[in-house]
Length: 335
Image (cartoon, rainbow, N blue to C red):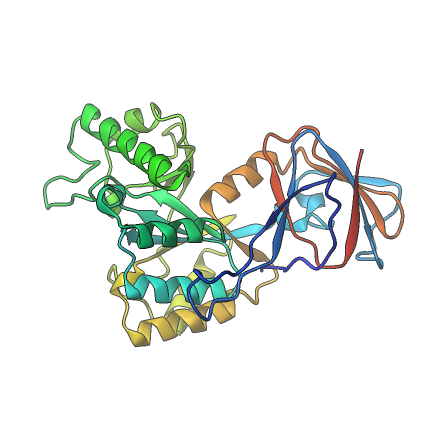
């Protein structure tokens, strides 16, 4: 569940990212105001206006299970990850409708970009993609050309060199056109082979593999077959939510969508489903890379409760910066 920031920030304690609406923003979309980034290697003291839990004072809480009880609970929570497939540089009306819908819920989400499409993208669409990256969207690598046939695919049955070249060109063009480093990959059609594993491990920017191989050398997040049947057709809400419950034991539930294929009824279905999923206390929406960095660090971040309203947040052993979102007003200091 997303929790909007309500506190005030101390400039010396955290890096502050402020995102304002401006005249170039799509109409009727309201964005969040600020995010706070807790830097690795730092220790922070956070003081809330009132008590936020009943934990024992003068006690350290460390590890995933204990972290769930503290104000840093979101860093250890179970995840819902949206995997929206087949975005192109020319952003269609259906894609814009989809982005407006999910952003209206204030949730983190991700979209798989077919990267060759950036080679001829116009200024307006490039600006729209950059606009998404300033918000809550992660763009992930969904192939160079998304080639699929009955007998082979872009990442199935093609040579190591071709697969490597398609990955390398994709990462490079996104960096060049959008100033953005991709960290996540998902194969077109989820079709892959052993050359895919070799090629991915030769691309240092890519850390996360959606629907990949558990032994592929990257952080694999398997798909939960919840959202669509057949592919591109969204299940009605009661079916969707019933199948979602089948995966309740998973730490991360990865939901595959194809927004550009949806009709009005399916957009209505998606809204109904998001109403239900955003009400869950047990899970929050994350991007794939956000989930990866949280899993990497969640057992080394600690919280020491100093008194009823003051906490020491220790990111000394963390490898990554973490977005921190609190439920209550607060003040910060760095130590």
